[in-house]
Length: 123
Image 1 (cartoon, helix red, strand yellow):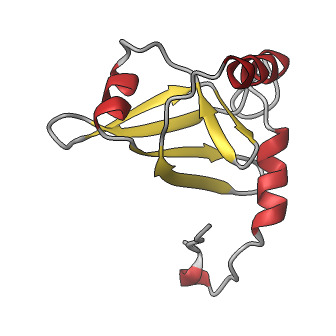
Image 2 (image 1 turned 45 degrees about the horizontal axis):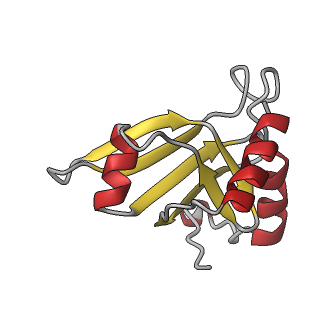
């Protein structure tokens, strides 16, 4: 994993990733768990014309990756199928995090069931 410290203007050190990832593990979508009423994740994908598409999503950090649920006909899913490059952003009380990478479709029943269970637990 490659880190980029956006706080270099303030001469702050790069954060250690382990506590950040542990904090992401604890985030939920349940009401009352973040601001303004819950933690909102934002997914950025690439539209067919090359412009960015940003949408609020339900997401969880699990097993070292963000997991996002979408119907196959949604714009975000169509964008990811055509161009899997994406970014997920979330603001927490302690830090703002942006994770960029490449999406992949997961259809394995056991994996999907586990992620669904975790999403349901988290609101």
